[in-house]
Structure formats: C-alpha cells, structure tokens
Length: 430
Ligand SMILES: NC(=O)c1ccc[n+]([C@@H]2O[C@H](COP(=O)([O-])OP(=O)(O)OC[C@H]3O[C@@H](n4cnc5c(N)ncnc54)[C@H](O)[C@@H]3O)[C@@H](O)[C@H]2O)c1
Image (tube, rainbow, N blue to C red):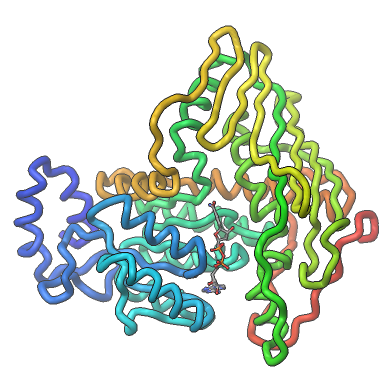
C-alpha cells in the first residue's frame, strides 16, 4: 500500500484513533505514487498527513495555503515555489508566523521559472497553483504528469492554446484518479449551491436570460523599475498585460460568467462585445482594457448580458441575476435570493468558501472519490476569453472559433529580457 492509498483508506476506517496509532507503523518504507520522499519517523509527518506544495506564493497562494490548513487537521504545507526570491522569502516568513503546519524549511523553498518542477519533485500530495494565469496550463500539465492532486486558482488560462492544454491535463487527471479543484469559490459556497439547486429544480421556471457584473474601482499596480528587464517589470505588474492575466474580463469576471454557465448548465455558443480603455490610459496599466460589455448567446435561444469594468470613482457591483419564465434569482456572495411563487432567501450558516473548496478537495482525496472541476472552469475561462476576443476584434466570435483558435500569447522563449508591450487592441483593425 503506498502513501496515497493509505490516505484514501484511512478515511474509510471509522475509528480514527486506530488510524492514528497505525500511522507510524504504516509509514515505514512507504512511498507515495508521486513521492520522492517517504513520510517517516523523523520528518514529523504522519502517514495520513496530506502534504501540500504551493506554486506562486503571492496574495492568493499564501491565502490558499492558510485556507488548506484551516480545512483539515491532516494538512501540512511542505514546499514553496515562486518566480522571485523576495516574494518567496516574504511568503515563507508570513506563513511560518501562522503556525508550525505552515513553516517550510528553506531547503524546500525554490525560486525561478523552474521552481515549480522542484516542488513537484518533493513528494507532496497536493499542489496549489496560484501564479498569474498565463502559467497555469503548463504547471497543471506538469502537476498531473507528476501524479499530484491540484487546487488551481482561476482563471486557468489566458488563451485558447492554454485552454486546450488544461482540458487535456484534466482528462489525464481523470484517467489517473487525481482530483482537480478550481478557485471558482462560489461553486463551494452554500448560498450559491442552495440557489442553484432551486434554479435547477425549476423554481424560477425555465432560465432564459441572465445579467452578470464585475464593476469596481482600481487594483494594485507595480511601477516599472530601471534595472529590471521588460519581462520582470511586466511579471511584477502582471494584471495589466493580456499575455499574463488575460485582461480583467478573464482574470476577474470569469467568476460571474462561471455562475451564469452553472445556472444555464451550458457554455455560450457565440458572443458580441464592446470594450475599450477610457479612464485608465497610463502606460503603467499595460495594454488591457478598462471596460467590457458582452452579449452572450446560449443554446436554446437564451442570452446573458455581462459587464466588467475597473473605473476609479464609480460604484461597484459584483453579482448575477438569472431570469426564468416564472421568477428571478439574485445571486451575490452570502446573499442569494429567489423571487417566484416559492420565494426564498439564504439564511443558513456558511463556511468560508475559500476554506470549503479545500475541505472538498481533501474529502475527495481521503474518500478515494476524486473530484474534477477542470473542464467546468476551463469552459468558463474560455467563455471569458471568447468575449475578450470579440471585444478586441469587434467581430462575433463563436465557441468553435474560440476553442480552435491558434492564439497563444506566451512569449517564446520566455526569459528575463526585452519585451515590448503589445499595442492596445483597436476593434476593427486586425
Ligand atoms: N479566487 C479568488 O477570489 C482569487 C482572488 C485573488 C486572486 N486570484 C487568482 O490567483 C492567482 C494569483 O493572484 P494573486 O492575487 O495571488 O497574485 P500575486 O501577484 O499576489 O501572486 C502571484 C505570485 O506568483 C508568482 N509568480 C509569477 N510567475 C511565476 C512563475 N512562473 N512561477 C512561480 N511563481 C510565479 C509571483 O512572483 C507572485 O508572487 C491569479 O490567477 C488570480 O486571478 C483568485
């Protein structure tokens, strides 16, 4: 029995104390499916410990590490990777301050473009993928090939080439019995789950239209520094470059588009969009747009209006509305309600969805019933990419065109050095 089998079997043993006493004995000489190191007497890890490596140790990677620890007493962070040594060091210090289960020895901390490979070689059971999304397809592909269970942040790609890679990696994960959970946390939030159960049970009749919004002010930015290459400056300020973030319609609004796909149990079949860069024109903000408006068409003559903007000094709105033939669902984190002949509003307790998503991943690993959210999040990401392609080009873009598009935004080879910023897209001009 290897260590992964042990983790699965341990959960099915009802007397957990018996498992605890078995753990030390069972660990002797044990090696996990992907392990290069066994958990033994001197590493402080019990055989039922789920070990986690973090790839991309910024705000979300560090946050997800804490959430994974909160999710179960069985988890432990054992390795960290980041592109930049300063980001790695501050994450390592910050995590260690939050407890022993987050304290990672320096020898298991890696930086550089190949740092992810070193985390994959540590023998961890799970990896958290939380770099800018441009790297997600390559990191996911390598993680699945290395036999890891994955928690990956959204979005999962920035272009169709990346989406195809993610879809292939998720198929491989299914074949290998590995779990893949995505950071579309609304899918793990009780309020949304209960509203969706009602929508899918027909409480609002047939869902026929939707509106979804991510309207907000600005986000953080990092000014370029002389002495840093173009590639480093762009990587440190990654939100504002389409090749790194996918633009904010992909990087943020994917959450709301995902909710509409979930309500309609479908992905859009085509879209037309507008967008531009009106209030945030400084070169500090790279080449992304600051606003998008999209009309998505879904199968069965259903439509969704989507709006995403990042405009300082304007009111925010992050929410979704689903319109059915017999009612309306209003959806928002912690505040979902339904207006119909059977009205409802969420009043239950909810676990922090950022923790719940790790609870769900750990339960899948321990029960031996893998979960795979890969295709669902890839389709929602492609929905957003399709809308960006429509807004940048001014053309109608179909699902088939988006999925088959050769668009691949990753510079090749990617290395620190010069990289002129691509021009801001102008619809109708190529
Ligand atoms: N689910 C959510 O609500 C939510 C919230 C925030 C961010 N996110 C997502 O999480 C991801 C990370 O966002 P963030 O806010 O943590 O950004 P961040 O800039 O704080 O962190 C990204 C980290 O990745 C590192 N990095 C960059 N390229 C790398 C590479 N090739 N290999 C290893 N490390 C690399 C950076 O140095 C940085 O430390 C994004 O996809 C973002 O959309 C999701």
